[in-house]
Length: 188
Length: 383
Image 1: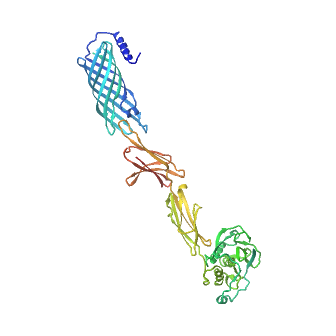
Image 2: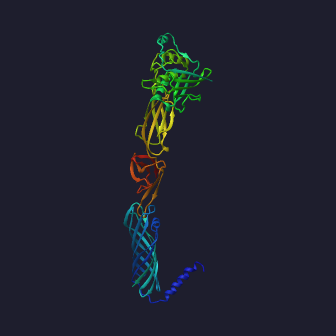
Image 3: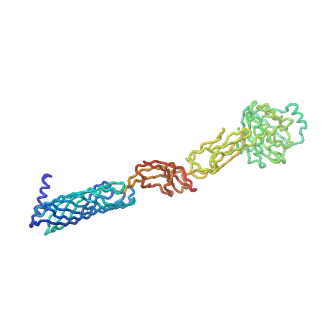
């Protein structure tokens, strides 16, 4: 089996599995999802001081027209670390939120989606140096898929990437990064 | 080598009434026919342990000074310290000692060893059995020493002045007759019957000032004066001889960097040409030495959103520092030094936080002694 064939086979398995629960697909007007996330910071210093970490998040999608949804989301990330030389404790909290347009394609029980739009991040960092807090804008892009489990209940997996530049004092940092999410939701 | 004995006998009433007339008419000195080479600086040692009365050493030195003062460049006697020798002996050392020679009329004897016309050694033995004095009564030590030293220079007994063979009272200067004999052998001015006393030298430490706190290389200087001449000045640090200086300006570079910090006594002893001394001393304080291995580096201690640069400074104690109370760290601010932090004696690291990452910082760290005095500083720049 070549490496090129592997994704095709994997997709076939997923499609075969979902077909076991094949039901008539009702048009989606609204969906809500919530679950855990895993965040990979883009900023080098944030990687060094805090590293990767888990968080929480959720989103709402509202059908605008045919396969186009209005999308709104929010994620939180909070982690402690230590300053690079003195090893004094430091803590950062990020609440990233935003929205945009999402394109959704449904095939049986599976729906694939791809979207993007503006985002913002409320941030707060506390340590011996002082405190930095504020909100700065950026953008976010997301792709994912969900499968209807039973009725309107869905299992959703997604990945997004955000870029949000913040400069509360003298340092500018990108508070975005890549985020993986596994969520449970409901579609109406 | 022959041994020639000359004796000064106790006063027996044989005082020569016509001495003055003889001295005016013609010099009546008598030469022994042997002398020291012209220009000799003859060292002598004194056995003070056998001394009879207080002040005998000073009296002997004074007598030596009287002869040396006539023409120091032609001949002089220089005190070289004490000896344990108790009687005459041809041992290469010119000795003055006291020995019990019984209740004879002999007061003192000078023993001369010579070769041809050159004297090789003299020993003077005082008769311990006599009643000696340095303050007027009995037999005056200085008078007898002056007579015996006349033999040392090469004069024999004469019928006038100090070289008469009989004691006739205190006489502590070289008379013109004996002086003429000396000048005939060693040169100089005959002059009159003057005092010809060589006064002790004087010395004063002029640097550093008393009580001064010093460090590094310190110039220790003294002024020394003498009516005849200063032979040398010795400098001591806590009774340890540091150097001898034989010419003015009398000074030396005292290296305190190899010493423990603390109090030191500096002393200068001046010697004149006949070994008379004077001393001066002061106390100074050697400051703590600069701490060892003072080093520093700028470190980035920034978090994701908050910037902080730190100058990390460290140093080590100096192995020659003692009783250190702590350390003080100074930072240059323009032309001033501001005290940045103070530490106990066990702290050797400091983090200077929130420094400007583009600025150069200059520091000095100093050890502080028990008297709260800053020592020498170790400095560095951090860019």
